[in-house]
Amino acid sequence: MSSDVVRSAGSKCDVEVFFRPYIVERLMPAVYRRVGVPEGLNAGALIEVVRSRSSSLNRRMCLVLGPEDCWYLEPDGSMKWSDDPPSGGVIIKP
Image 1 (cartoon, one colour):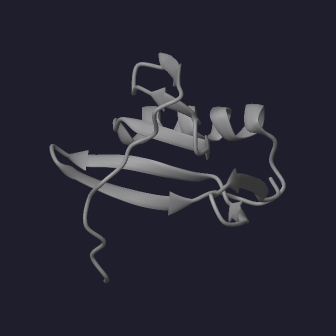
Image 2 (image 1 turned 135 degrees about the vertical axis):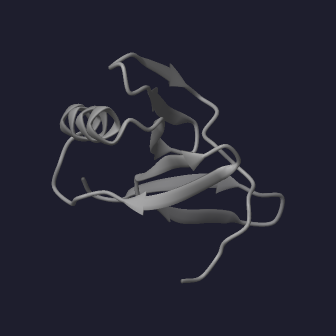
């Protein structure tokens, strides 16, 4: 899937930000990992990849497709669309 361009009208200038989809994987309560997604897949294919991974690893996941476009997926196969992707947290370098 190619990067989307997100445009934001600011008070002084327009800003373009390139957005790449990603996965947020819940490792345990309050511990999450951000994972990149394979290139060249459309949204439907990405949802199936994440659904399969969520089920096989028995972990909750969120596929973030845009700043206000994400799918929350459960290990039981259920999923829910939201305009509120996960936010906050601290980046820990390996």
